[in-house]
Amino acid sequence: MFKRVLVEDWTLYLPFVSFFLFAAVFAVVTVRAIRLARPERTRLAAMPLDDSSTASRSPETDNSPLP
Image (cartoon, rainbow, N blue to C red):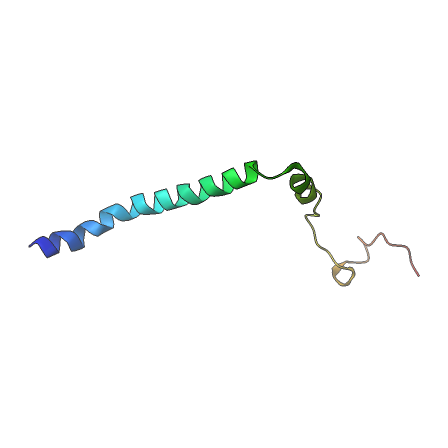
């Protein structure tokens, strides 16, 4: 009987375990982001958001001078 109780009750703890795992990862990432040095924050803030290469540009959006 005790084995049956243990097998059926583990599913009740799964939402709590997943929430605490998510909260722990979120807390670690947040603390790490807060503790970044100023030069590192500036470097990361200056990174481009769109990594478009010359091969993927269309002629309408390509602002480079013609050769």
